Each structure stands twice: as structure tokens, then as C-alpha cells.
Amino acid sequence: MKHFVTLLLFAASMQSTAQNPIIHDQYAADPTARLFGDRVYLYPSHDISAPEGQRKDWFCMADYHVFSSADLVHWVDHGVIISQEQVPWGKPDGYSMWAPDCVYKDGKYYFYFPDAPRQGRGFAIGVATADSPTGPFVLEPEPIKGVGGIDPCVLIDLDGQAYLYWSVMGLRGAKLKNNMKELDGEQQEMSGLPKGFKEGPFVFRRGDWYYLTFPWVRGDTSNGANPTETLAYAMSRSPLGPWDFKGIIMAEHANRCWTNHHSFLELGGQWYLFYHHNDYSPSMDKRRSPRIERVSFNADGTIREVFPTERGVGITPATDRIEIDRYSALSVGATVALHDTIDCFRGWYVTLPDKGWVTYDDVDMSTINDGYVVVCAKAQANTTLVVRERNKSGKVLARLPISVGGEGQFRRDLRGQWQTLTAPLAATVASTTTLCVVCEGGEASIDWLQFKNRPRYFVPAVKGSTASPDADGFLKRWHLLEPIRQDIRSNTVFTDTWLRRVFAEELLKLPKRKGKWHTLDSEYYNMRLFRFAEKWGTQVYGNLFWATCVIDCPEDLVDVRLAAGSNGASMWWIDNREVLLLSGDRRMVKDDGMSGRLTLSKGTHEVRVAVINGPGLSDMCVRLLDKDGKPITNYIIR
Image (cartoon, rainbow, N blue to C red):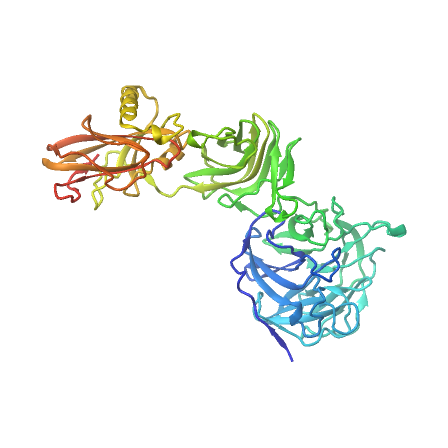
């Protein structure tokens, strides 16, 4: 009887992004990568913390997940495909579901996995089949006859012949029958390999060469020594050898993580090595996570040594959250640390000394056209982070001061606290580039950065064109002066007397202001001044905004009212005469205040507004209403 395994869909929306390790919410070891169609599918084992009754210092695996990606950057977890209690011949509490593999042949996907059998000792290797790389998988009632061991790998050669390789006191291989579930002939030990512990075979073909790759302990194991694994390989002109040992692919992990396990994949002409490391479990090397590196070959087909990186592979969209601590290069004195040594899945952050820097390769900036950068950082003293390109042009993209004293009514000691900093981009990049973040003026720590495009809050008005009020009468074209910084600790100062004094003083200074005026059409009924400051100002809070609007009335407008609202306090003038004052710490509401009755004669008139705000999100809107409270729309805006 075959057993049917239902794919769990609850995890289908969970997604991990670029940088090593590639899976960020769970342990996933022994990654086997396969290209099916236009997606890469990853079949790892699943390390978990040992439950009661299991060895706390040993491998513990109860099920298999499958992940997929279209770009090696964004990985989707498709959920559990097989769990130990569903295997008809396996121990339901064996926690022995070690390194698997999956291949495609003749319309079917074949999933191979080791497990501890209900009867006897050691391991057996089972098979499950599916019509999709993510399942549901149908389990065979018995394991493959005559195969005892772990870490199955299957090679389907160019002629369609399939070969099974596995580990059992060395490395073995054999042909598979066409049904992919039985050996076809005798198994044989792989010859020509070096002495020492070997496991986890992965075999692939490149041109006329076959590559047998495997974890290998090359160190001295006598006298109780416990050296860690390398990744090594041998080459042959035949899928079952004899093999010519060539050497090391990847050396032992620097932190003495005991195991490594891997697979190779070619994608778009580039070869990749998938392997694992205990990134999220530095004190326990039986809980591992998958990584990826690029692989290159010498002219004679031998593999060049691969070195682990934090950055990994893939092009990261600038709109992704970029974990800059998964760096490409670090300056002298820069360090990387975990946020939480207990919950390591919270990730890392990088600390830069004064003039220190960190780089991150392959960021796609092409989609950022009207953007800004957000950085999560902290500092003990006032410092500035400079985000720039690291290439010959060296464009400075943004400067982000880190305040340690707070601002306005939120003034408090922010030393050593994580802050989300935002800055407009001083330059744009239309291609893939290397980012460099430099610390100036002290030590600073950085968690992540991200680029964002602003929504179309407003667009530059076409020179010489005219506009009209919208259907509800709101004026949406304004000439705005770049915001003027104000030291406002609390909006409680916005009394009538204070506002009239400040606005009068600022009005006298207005003709001499050096800031640039921008003529903009709002996409909304309101003018979102906070977003204007975000793009054209030096700060987003604590600003005074001046705006004017010129209207042409085709006839006399009698008994009209100016109806306005603002986030922050505001004063409104028509033809240099004050018509409305909105004082106090306001939140913007349509028609929050109304002027007295006005008569606007036929011809041109200027509407002017000053909006002032401290820590709030500045905003304003205005329209003209007739004597019955209906919006007036029969005039032109220049």
C-alpha cells in the first residue's frame, strides 16, 4: 500500500530573501538544489531542537520542507512535504530524516530520503513520488531493497540512465532501474578516494566529466581528535568511476562547525555551490542553515576553491531590506555581532568606527527614480552615515545624521538606541551597483537599509499650463518654497499671538529667502507638505512652509468663503489680506476653518498660506465655497 502525503499550505506565503544564510526563520541543513522549469527548488533536511528523550547534542530531524526561488534571492517555503510519522517503514519518533534529494524523470518527481527503519538498526533509503516538485508526495511502502545508509543522491545521465549514490562506511553507487525505485545490478564502492571519513555524496556531470563531491575529514582522528569536514571532490569519465581525487572545494569552517553538506547547480551558465553552516546556532553545530556561493572551474575542468561569504549570491533589489551586516567587504576595525545570542534568528548588525565602512555588492537600483533611503542605526554620539556607490564615480546617494538628543517635544536621550533614519537621495543610479556605507564623526551600528520610491504625491506642473479645481473644488496646484527649518519643541506654542508674530516676521524675510520655489500639481485633494519636505527639505519635522496659488476668475465671485484645513497651524491670505487663521496643534480636516464672506472680482487673485509644524506630519487643503456651501470650480489656476 502506498501512503499519500498532503502538502501543508500554511507556509506557502513565507518568504526569505538574499544574503547568507538564505533561510531566515528555521534551520535547514544539507541543501540539495535542483532546477525544475524556471525555478530552483531546494530540498534540505530540517534541524530542530531535540525534544524530551532525544540527545541534546546530536542531529534531530523530523520532517522535510521544500523551498523555491526564481532568482536565488527570494525563497518561498512551500511547507512540509513528508514527516517522520507518515513514513510507513520508518520509526515515527526516530528523528533521523537526514539529507535528501529530488529528481525529475518521465513526468514524475522522485524524492529520496534516509530514515531509521522500524525494524533493525542503521538507516534505509526511501522513495516518494509526485506530479509537482512541491508535492503532494506518495510514499513507497518499503525502502529501496539492498540499500542501507544515508545521504542519497541521484544522477540522471544524458542517456536517461539514473544512478543512486549514498554513504555507508564510505561512498557507494549503483544503477537504478527505469522505475527509479530499485537497483539495477550490483552496488559498488567508489574507488580512488582518499582515506578518512566521507559522507554526503553529490554527483553531477559537466561536459564529459563526472564529479563526485563529498564532505571529507582530512584531519587526524587518532587519540580522540575530532576534526571537522571539508568539501572535497574527484573526477572521472564514468559515472561510477574509477575516480581521480582532485582535492578541496571548501576548507573546514573557521568556527569548527563539524559538518558541511552541499550540492551543485548550473543556472544561466553560472555554477553555484549550496552548502550549510551553523550561522544561527553558533554554540551548537547540529543546527545548520543553507548558504550559496558562486563556483568557477579551471581550463582542465578542476574546481577552484570556494570561500564562504556573508554576502552570498544574487542581485538584491534596492527595495528589499538590505542586511548590510551580510557584507561584501568590511574596513579595519568594523565588527559584526548578533542582536540576541539566545534568539539568533533576529540576525546581526555591523558596527563601524569613525571613517569605517561596509560594502554590499549587486544592488539593483534601476527601479528607484523618485526615492529616499531608510536606515536602521544607532550611535553613542552625533555621527553621520554616508550612503554612496563604491565605484569610480563614487556618487554620494544620501547623508543621514544620527541624533542622540532627540527633537521637539520628543526630546530625550537616544544614545545607543536604534533609530529609523530617512533621507532623500541626492543622486540616482540606473543600474546594479555596490553600495558603501561610511561612518563619519564617531562609532555607529547599522542593522539594515532600504530604498523606497515615493508615491506620486505630486508632479511638477507643465510650464505655461493651467489647471482647474477638482470636482470638490480643492486647489491642487501650488507654488511651494523649500521648507524653512524651525526649532519647535512643542506645538502648544501655536497661539494666535505667537503665530501672528512669527508669520509677520517670516513674511518680511520672504523676498530674501534663497530657497527654490517648486510648482507642483497634487495627486490628492490635499498638498502633503511632509512628503514635500522629505524630498526637497533638509528635515521632515520642525518646518515652516510657504505656498501660493494664482487663480483667474472669469466673473465676480460674491459671498464666497475660503474653507481650509491643515496639519499644524496655518494662516491664509488672499491678495495679501489675512482671511483665516488656524491656530493650535491641529490635525488636518476638510473645511476645518472658514473665512468670512468674501467677494473676488473678475480677474487674477493670489491665495497664500503659511503652515508651521513641529513633530507632526505637515499637510494642508483649501477650496472656495459659495453661499450655499457648495464648491466653486469655475476658475482657472495658473
